[in-house]
Length: 61
View 1: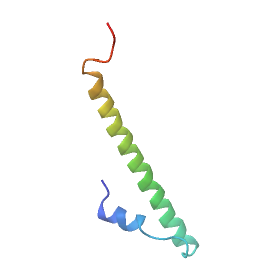
View 2: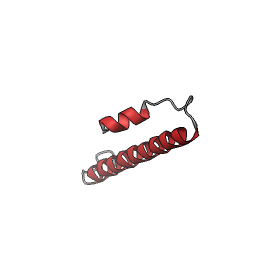
View 3: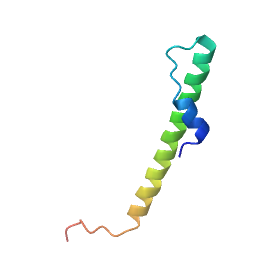
């Protein structure tokens, strides 16, 4: 879940920013996106491991 600070950083348009400021915001945005991707992958792994504990009803006998 995005924190309020993350949302503020992600909403910044870097197109009109100067060099150092643009580099800072783009770096922070990349970190936020990487963290979100990692959280999504962890959630998917938890979901997959939950599904492997249930019986497979699709298998033919």
